[in-house]
Image (cartoon, rainbow, N blue to C red; front, side):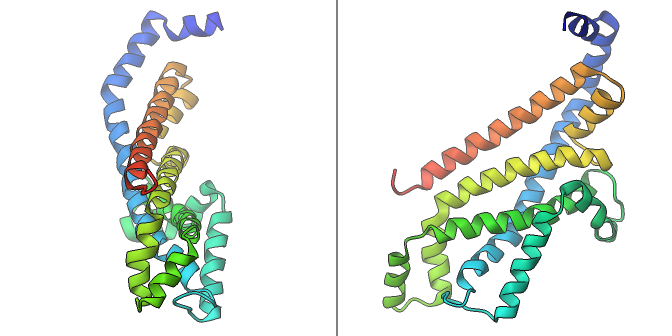
Length: 235
């Protein structure tokens, strides 16, 4: 251990590490933040309505849809959730190339991040909405509320604290995925950790990159927890 520490802080290596941190870390932090936030927003935009459909569209739901369509949505979500992320990146390469005209870089990484995360978000949304008290829904129905009014004014508001907590889980998971995408040409802190820490054996650079990822996770978690508490009527 002492030899490892001495090798990391040797004059030449320490100076080189500091130069890498100064020159490349700021952009890498921005790329990780950009990929995570954009992918999470897109995943929520797709996953939120799908999660609502999984609850309201079942046979006894407030907005039942054809059984074959409901089972098809379930099957697609289960299938995409079952594919490991690194394999999924390769599978969606044609889609990525069609959308952004390349399969490497920060922008290209957003596409597989969205494909991998929106089924996860849909299941989280489904779980949150199923936690809503059925008596509240029955009361809205008895008052003559339409299905869409129940969704907008009952299901979403009542499950909002749980939704925010689950979206926080999603954004931290996507941040981890964004680091993994560096293995196949993605950008961000994962790229720094892999290119310098793994391939070039610059352990200190990798430690700094991992520490920054951990700090970003803590930041997202703190913000999400405070927002969930703010909208929790029980508090």
